[in-house]
Image (spheres, protein in one colour):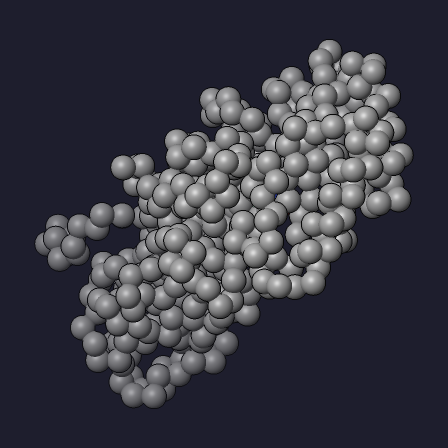
Length: 386
Ligand SMILES: Cc1ncc(COP(=O)(O)O)c(C=O)c1O
């Protein structure tokens, strides 16, 4: 038994599947994004576990590189950051109609306000906590998702004024989200900017002023129009990924922070005609070697990658053979000398390695989803900020 163990090379990352996150890349990307919007503040968006990279670690790296704010969708995500000892300003913007927002006010977490109903929840939370809630009002300038419509805006501003007088809230920011900033020159971009400016003017006429106006997500930072206002709000870019179809990360001065690696867990020689994985949809055409990779849809590897996406072993690309299962998939390496314990690069950025974008193309999705879906079961290993 001991002799057999010695035959397996000692891996740097012994877990079946590991996301290696280079926090220096996140720090460098924050600096690059900041340089693209000089003199503005930066809110690093670390929702959904930091787009799969680990929210707390990504947040700390971003703050170390000069991020001023953190942005998340949910209160729970914001509280996790506070509980990790992060004291910098945090904004969250999505909550349910029954959610108690008192912990946000108690922990000095800024709250996005998109509707009158949400605003009432905020006022109730402020009354419970006995202090003003810091709010950022969200206007829907064209995305058609959350945010107040132009028709609702005036009523909301009046409610804000009243609550301000009652000592319940402190208006801090006004923000909106772009629909098509990943399509440079799209007519909606200028229109949304104009609608945003109009909403700010309307607020001024009702004596509601904001010190932080923010509109730009990652593609907005790189838009032809100046969309940076007082604060930019990038997510994808801080992880070193490009939101554009025709410009890669390197062209934007960014570099991917995440590598997803596994180790070959079993190697076996099989005859021609061997069916592989559920449904037996893949069959070896000749006698061949199958390598088992312990990564599946339980880890966030899309089942849609079955027979489509590629991995790299010993510098060579192999397509997934058959269906991705919950915990594992198989590659057919032919007669190549692949060994137990060989590193399998699932997502990489070195020349020849499969990229997040390769996986997005193979599975009909976007790079955002490929990294964000990596589940809690994937071990995360961090290279500290240099
Ligand atoms: C309100 C808001 N701001 C900023 C972002 C960050 O966007 P991106 O990852 O494109 O930079 C998001 C993410 O979807 C968002 O919902």
